[in-house]
Image (cartoon, rainbow, N blue to C red; front, side, top):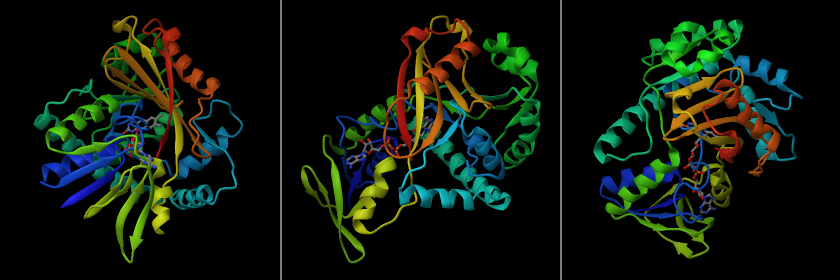
Length: 357
Ligand SMILES: Cc1cc2nc3c(=O)[nH]c(=O)nc-3n(C[C@H](O)[C@H](O)[C@H](O)COP(=O)(O)OP(=O)(O)OC[C@H]3O[C@@H](n4cnc5c(N)ncnc54)[C@H](O)[C@@H]3O)c2cc1C
């Protein structure tokens, strides 16, 4: 079968790899000059099944209200006259009940554990290198109240086969010695030894090379404008390079998938949540974290990627712009510098913004 994959981000390239491995003829189209140039470019780098909790939860409502008006709030809601945003918000709110949270977190955990297993098999089969580290992720808490409140979900996730183990302040420092200076500010943490970190862009580039070895054809600088539909079937995909026909089509355009799906009257409940990352070159590796870290209070994630410390966070709901708000991105950089003084060179920080689908 000939399959056309629209989108060469992490998802499109991974899909192409598995389809080609199963003997299909695969073509990939993307509007950028190469693979992984949009959301898969500089994300937080965390492979964290232990944190596959849905954002929609009873606690989220209380937290979001508390963040209103705060300039460095982890989540910003920019009110717009946009039906897609309202529809997404209505679905989000409907999923904030305790029962839905439980159901959704169990479903997400199953997918996440399956993905982790698949990633490990893929790594063994291909030998690709993407600055991966398999040394777990430490989730730190500064507030005792928040730490205590997180225990129940940690126990549930652990019972479902994904260890999220409570550790005290001293154990946090033993796991992550670079936290020594901040020890006094910590209430405790959860250690998730099965989690990993890695560079999503490097992963996507390396896997795209393996795809080419398997005969996958890539067309870059090719923008998809619509799906042509006849009855229940998509018959071709219209692009700036003319129509592409295949036996089956995969839509992997990240946050843009709903816009293209809509041209064939298909509605997808996906909306972009803009986030920022800051990549800080290491100055003194001994003072930087050895693996992954999550700072619960600020909702910032840290990943050690080669000679770089990647820090990511913030979620802004309000359209498709990838404008970098200097104050918000700067807050992420400053938080990293405060937590790991002298580890990195803040003057050489690289800022990025992307749209989480
Ligand atoms: C700040 C931030 C931090 C994150 N941290 C993490 C993390 O730590 N761990 C984690 O698992 N996830 C994280 N994510 C989420 C993760 O990065 C995304 O889920 C993932 O990259 C999405 O991959 P994708 O292939 O679906 O989308 P994309 O990478 O966006 O790929 C979509 C592709 O489609 C192409 N495209 C779009 N529209 C068109 C069109 N009309 N025509 C042709 N091509 C088109 C784009 O060029 C792009 O290459 C983070 C995201 C952000 C923003």
